[in-house]
Length: 480
Image (tube, rainbow, N blue to C red; front, top):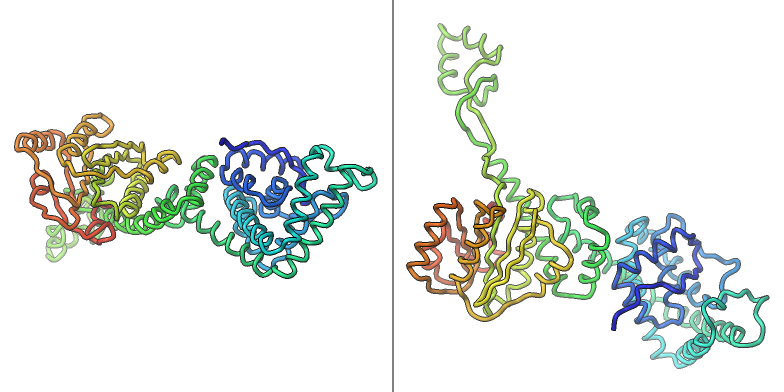
């Protein structure tokens, strides 16, 4: 059943203005997580509670409205007061204040925990359950537009009955919070920790190409995409695990790229200048001789001595990448590792504005192309949840890689080939592949997991034996 993306009940016990309410409605429309916790709400006023929790986290100076408060929202006020009086609340707000993503993710987690706490409380407290059911039954008879009537406007009838039932429910809720308040605050603390973990994972998945700049990079991703992936992270343990591996591998990748950059500064020819450490041996010889020293010093002062020219290698980090990943049945245990590895490669591609093609293969093949290293929430979900299974077909994968390289976008791409299997390749295909490799001037790096490397050596420029993706040998891929 499709969830409603519309907020009908925007009543509040917090000092929200028109902007706050409009912004929360926009975020609610974007977030499956907010829509889900509304559906699972244990209170009749969960929809209004969501907006208040978000406002208490997002606003610079949230405060509870004690004057002219809607009588139907007394239970919400009790919960928000408990939340805001928590000694750690202001510390939580350092994470969420004026941050659309963090405030929304934390709202989802907090209301999720509040729902669970209320469900547990109802299971143990029959009086609380009865009073909540009474309010729910009466609320069905009172339209929302009539719920904001003030006490002096209330006459006998459904509105008065609902107000009386809400008072009784709130009294019971206050008693429950007094007797079981520690568990409530513990649940709130858990929710904030989980929210921080979701955001950190989101940075690993979508904004982890530069150390220390994750928040800034994440802000470049549309908010709708951020929220979509945050919802997936919150609900799918596999994507959480992939994010953890991605974060680890990205750290290694950044170090490898930094080392590569330094090592790529090499001597290329001779130029004119006055940098002592780059002087050619002949100039040092002229300085050593009494008869030529003055001429050397004059030319050195004028910047006209001969020195080695140093340039960054032109081919470093320039070309696209084709990543062929074995997804035969035996690779199942390494699936989350391998997806984290792909995301680390994507972080390199994103930073260097390189195209990356991922070819998942077994006895079938699936192609995913990420232009300039960018990945959407839909593509991420598909990549995370795809596992082909079956046998291993090297020829199918290598033929697919050749077809990708034929595309002008992937001209001169380098291939990274990963497999834990063995396969036979015909001599005719090997000749065709190696001829095309020479013609197109691309290279193949192969990582073999726990198997013989003889077949891989027939089509690869370099073959490394590794135990898994966390093996130091696999990190050579981050230097491509």
